[in-house]
Each structure stands twice: as structure tokens, then as C-alpha cells.
Image (tube, rainbow, N blue to C red; front, side, top):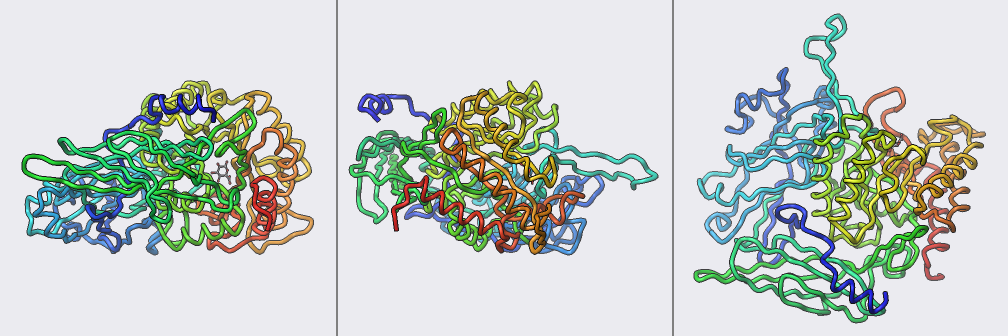
Length: 635
Ligand code: BDP
């Protein structure tokens, strides 16, 4: 970056505006903050009444759930669907209720200078939360956190245990994200009274329940509410522009200290906004692009707020990486170097726990990705747990961060109500994930019906809104349309395109892939002059099924199909083609249907994370690509 560009960057308005009222910092312990996890077994009851409304009619939140009727033990976090032997619960649609009591530390109650916050990492889809029978918050959307301050409430009856009740509804409508419809079957000769089904236009099981940790955490009454950082560098100097928002009161002093990975002092500053200069900067690099990937600094924000009667002190430490992202007509640049995505698409999905947060699974997946030589993945088709993003930051795994805009196929889901909600979801997503160096691009949707006339206005608005929230990252949506049908294409920074040649079309005809795929790429590039990522491609393979010559559903066919795509990728790689993400990292559960044999089998690993033949093919390729494109140091 030239001196002038650097000066412009320093003078320019802070790129990221604060989108929502209040921040959503990941809860971290510090000398002035405590965290209490409420994971474990909660009481649980599904509301099986015909209108699914008995819980509200009888105010189940006013008492212990166990007093309202039969309850079962339900682990949190987990999807409830696969926990019992009851198919009705697996396929349940409507409200389910959770509750538990918590012993709140006496000091949290007696110390009026302490704020106590209840936080749910995510619950799918719509949630209402009560504490001791009083509603404290509600939230729409299945994959992002929400919280409520409950300090005054728990101080009202300090000797009583605190009862938390959470009701969660997984019903999807035309205006939810993802959308769905409820269809009543009124033919009484074929269906019992009140029979209904949930229809969805996406290909994964609509797991539900409390999927991520429920926490209580404290902050002082005056507290660090949000931090936003943007990074840049010139030659050997790193630049961190920061903004801190404080809530809860009066005049305060903010001290910012930056430390390197070993805890050594690097730079400091005062005040709620400013720029930290980092001499001899260690940039954040992707895995396999540098010998020291995922380098993180720590930014300690220390607050002292003084009033006539009291002093409040708060401290929050944010890990951050210094890097830049830029897109040209043909390249994706990280730290001004061309980056080639060789990665996967994932799901938060596993046996028994469904979409529930699970450390062993997460760590295993990272080990498998590193074994494969993966340098990136897309959070298909919804935001993943924050702990996963933190792993990506630390390991240098690059992310395309996708919102739950999947299955937008019905023209009625392009209306104002849908768009407004979609904008709010982008606000919440950017607010949560803006400081992660691993996040290099936002994806606002997957395979919407982008050929429909309203798609143009919808995506123009959505993409412009996202760019206004965050001017430091490119924005895309993932398309499957043909270039000349796609209405939103002009607005994306990078074309992310899915295709299933020789799978959903021309079944079994691997010989057509080279022609169809290269025509497809040429058309996209001619039309939009943007770099292209193959954001999905793949074939189902039932593990252990073999045929040679290859036939569909065998491990050989999956291999051969990947190979025929790779040949075309290699031709286009030095032109405008900037990445390949296999569909999918692992097999995953879907709704039942004649196209799915106990779920989608396009994984290169089974759902239990054992490799199919394709995993070895891909491993060889990705390590070769790392050597060719990633500037790996020679052994
Ligand atoms: C793509 C979708 C993905 C599906 C995949 C498939 O984006 O969610 O699972 O097809 O059919 O079109 O396997």
C-alpha cells in the first residue's frame, strides 16, 4: 500500500458501523468478568397439543416444567430430535419447552455493581426466554446468539433459586430464514384431523432445540459493550483501527494494550477509538500459505469508570489477526498475495447430537481438515458456533461466512417481510463475526431462485446493506443458476457457483463434465468479469459400494467425478478461477425422501468421520495445490 493509500485509510470513516443496538462480544472470563455454563441436563417437554399452544394457554413458564406434566431429561446443547426412541419427537413441529434451576452465586446478587447476563449461543428457530416466570427476551433465528440482562430480576427474590425456562419453536414459514411452509392435509379419507407437514426447500434435517451453550456471565455495571477492529499494514508496520463502545454510564478511561502471541507488549492507546501501530508486524496468514499461519495478537481493553460513589473496572481481551482482503477481476488477495481456496463445505451435523455443539467433533473435524490440506471452508448453510470461528482464527483456516438464507425458492419469500428479516440477520451476523480474521467474505444466501424478477432488488438491497455494515470484506451469494438467468450477479464481488454435472443432470455421463463445466465458467466470466469459486460440486457415495467402470453411488464414481472437475479447475486456475470447495466434508442427515438414503452421502468422510476413497484423492490434490499456489516453504 502506498503512503497515500495508507493516509487515506487512516482518514477514512471507520468502515464498520455498529449495526444493532448493543454489542455481542463472545463471553470471556477476565479479572472483572465471570462465566457460568448452564450446560447439562434440562427438563424438557414437547407441546403435543393439537394447536401446539397448551404451554402458553397454561403458562408453563410460571411453574417448574415438571409440575405442568411429564418431562424428560434433555441434554443442552443438543438437537432434541435424535435423543429418544420416539419418532414423533424426531419429527416434531412446534413448541418445545426446556427449564432448569440455577444457583446464582450470592455475590452476583448482593453486589449492585454487577450485571448478570443470560446468553443463549443459539436455539432453533424461534425462542422465548423467561426467568422466574418473567419474560426476559425472545429471538428469531436459529444460528445466532441472543441475551438478556437479568440482574434486577434475580435480585427480587435473592434466596430463591433462579428458574430459567426456554420455549423453542422450529416452525418455518415463508418469511423465516430458512423459509418453509406448513401444509395441512385436509382430505379426511387419507389423513387424520389436523394432520400437517413442514415443507422445506433445503437439503438438511431441520434439527431443533438449544444448539449451543447457555451461559450466565457478569460484567461490571459500566462495561465494555462492543469492540470493532479493522486491520491494515504497510511494509513492516501493522495498523489496527479500533473502536470501543462502553455502556452503563458516566465518564471513563479506556486503556488499550496490544500483546503479541507470547504476551509481550506491542503497542498501547487510550480512548474509545484510535489506531495501534505494530512495528515488525506478524501478519495473519492462512494455513499452508505461510510457515506461521493464524498469528494472533491480543488486544486488552481496560476500562475504569468513576462516579461520586463508586468505581467500576472492566477488562475484555480480544484476539485479533492483522491481515487485508481484496478482490480484483481475477484474483482473491490476502495480504496482497493471491489466495486459492482449496477447501470444503461443512454442516454442523453428527449422530445423536444433531446440530448440537460438541468439542470432540469440532477438534476431530479440524484435524481431518488439516490432514486433507484444507485451507478454507464455507459455513454452509448458516452461521456456525463462535468457537469454530475462533479455531479457524488460530489455525489459519479461511472462512466464507454464510447466513441462513438457504432454500429461498418461493416468490413469496422475496417480499418485504422476508427482506427485512434477512437484513436483520446480516446485522446480527456481522455484529457477531466482524472481528474474526478468518472470515474473508460474507455469503448472504445459497442457491436462491435468483432467476425470479424480484431477486434483483432483493439481492441488490441485501448486498449493499452488507457492504455498508462492513467495508472490509467482499460479499457474495452462492448461485446455481445459469449466468444469463441470474438477476443478482451484478452485485456480487466474487461469483460462487454450485454445479452437479453428471449427477443431477446427464446421470452417469462423466464424459460431459469437461465441456459443460468449462462452458459454464466461460459464461459466468464473460458476463460478470469477476473471479469464480466452485462453491459446491460432488457426488453421493455409499461407503463400501464399489464398481469399475464407475457407476453412480460408488466410491469409484465419486472419485471419477471429482477428478473430471479437477481437470477443468486446473485449466482455469491461472485465469479467473480462484477456488474449489467440495460438497461435502462429511455425510449429513436430511429429511426423508427417495433421493436420500439415510441422509446425503456426498461426504468424502462418512458421518462418523471415516474416509471414503475420495478423501485420499482430495488429500493428494490439496497438498499439491498448497505447494503450487500456497507458497509453502520447500521441505
Ligand atoms: C446443493 C445444495 C446443498 C445440497 C446439495 C446436494 O446447496 O445444500 O445438499 O445440492 O444436493 O444444490 O447434495
